[in-house]
Length: 322
Image (cartoon, rainbow, N blue to C red):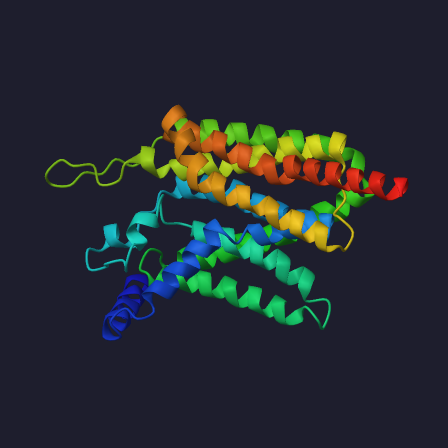
């Protein structure tokens, strides 16, 4: 049934000469490369706690997704059935095993968290609807491009919904028990270390073609897992640093504050474009991706908030001296 559905979409793509393919590829690309900039900007500039809630929901998904992927080891649709031909450049960007969809577990918590916050006022509710549509569009794009089955994306949506719910419960608990946060951050860090050991040493399926060629290389499949778990490790470290020593607050509604936060996003784009390949070259594919992800998360959770605090204090001093 799932393969038949993908073949139906494939026939539709071909019947319209792949007119929608570039758009679907853009949706998938935006979901994993640029969507995170929105809650990060919100965390910096508007509401620290609500932005943090969205990011924590995302980190829950980043912890669960690689563990499930690298336990289930489900092959991609085109490996399961040679009739499936992924559209455009999707086969290159579809890394790792198939189940669940990593693009969806990235887009759904990030866009879902923003949708939850923005639905509360009439002014922002249209934006909330746009975020919900983007979640569904991202999930559908993975089927449309032929790189995921319906069960891949449906499971990813369930994981994301569970992560949003769990994050809400966690924040409610920490509101009453703030003294427990350090212990939870340490537990999260240790869980990631355990998960890294698990995905590294566990056995993987080794299936070969009739000519003796390995169909799927487990080393390539586990690479995304190192990156995802690195993001969670980076968050645990950065959150401890930020809450203990930095304790920043978003700039008060001012043009200077907004401009500062927008400028802070530029290094994130630069880091992903240029620093990530450098780290992989220096430390190797797995450890390079892990170390980059740790630094990437540390930058937007702690390092740039430190810059915001320094600039805000400098502005306050100038105001006081006038």
